[in-house]
Length: 153
Image 1: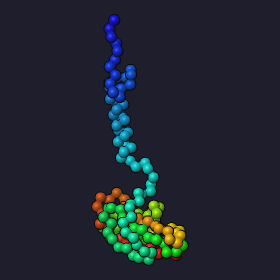
Image 2: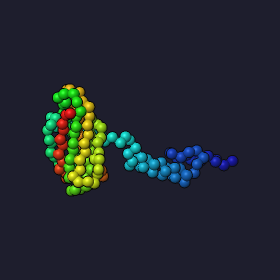
Image 3: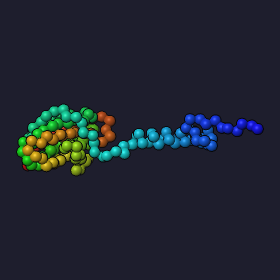
Image 4: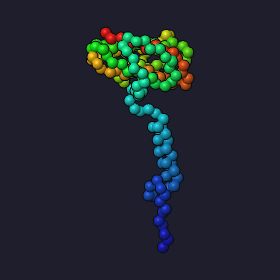
């Protein structure tokens, strides 16, 4: 009587052929690549670490170079914090996102220049607020001057 046992290779199901096992591994690899290349997570941008402390009423100017920027401020009284982020957008067609404590605000009319994003947040006296400036598009090159203005109403 001949020995009819089959050799089971790693990742091969008993009773399957080597060709079928290769196909299965290929499909698993392709699916893993698709999942790794797509962002199925939340749409909220990641909040960058705080870098600079600012005051309500201060106008901050800078250049967005592709790295997320973050500012912290303390509300001097209870009210509505209003933050306005303005930039030309004509240099690279960049879309910037303003965040207030992690909540993203995008431009109301992208494509209109100069571009502006306005966000507001109810705050308590003494509350620390993190204000972020993030890239909101798929630009490869950034070099966009911006102005960030805050007020308390």
